[in-house]
Length: 82
Image 1 (spheres, helix red, strand yellow):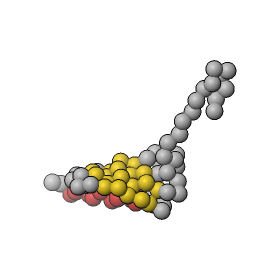
Image 2: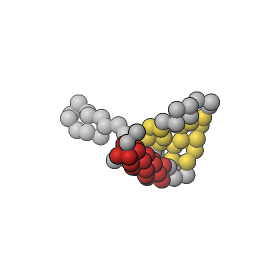
Image 3: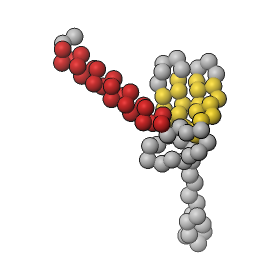
Image 4: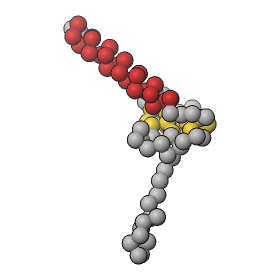
């Protein structure tokens, strides 16, 4: 492995860790349910969540653009949205 490749790999790992930390910081007042394979963590304050695959270490997070667990928009027959 070349020095350039090693440096790029280290930078990428550092950037991944930085972003992971920012996403995890949104999980305030967390509650977690888990089993041997998965851990689901939900923020009681803002609805942000993380689903962690414990075997691979891969985590999926709620959108960083919306701090809610979910949102529903309905359009009435009149055309009004609620």
